[in-house]
Length: 267
Image: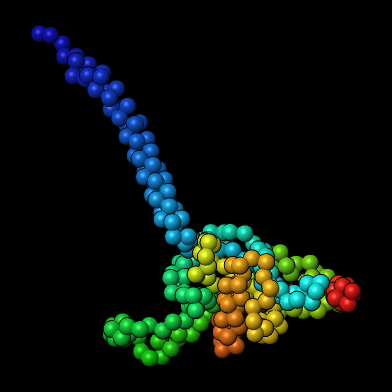
């Protein structure tokens, strides 16, 4: 009687195929997913590129009202913080999501991001009351919607303060006399600007200048800045009506530097 040899039941090529398959299949899956993800990002980027619309990007700009050597009032725009992705500025994913969705509600006449819009669907309110949400709970939710402005503006103020307020605050802390200037922080999404990409822009405007705007557009160096003046005028109206929808950044300037500014203005 012949002896049983287990090796005759195992095909070496079959074992080799299993080993190669176990190594290649995960690699193929990973490569396929990366390729699909790459082309999806390219397609989405091309879609935003054609529309000049980038709702995932935010920057911080400074609106400057000044007078030139001829005494003519001018409007300048400067970038304080370059383009950042929303999730880089807002560490809370839900806050970044609310900022992104709020941009869809902006228009040319309403560039400010709004987070306190009441629910327009009565069915939703009735459905919420079935699960125990009474009128008091709904009023509490309205107050929570108002607090969303602070959750949005606090990261923006912190980011802008790194470039503006650190030196002045340290000087005042050691006893250097300083004057405090208040800048109004506005989270906007401008639309209707020709030949310019649309994305989130956090604008800083001196409160004194915002509340005392000229009747006509000042001299601008670029035609696109004329649209910016219309945006600032609309923000001034909203700031007078509801200042809690904006943020405030305080800038401390030493009095010695202000004397130099007065000397330059008198020359």
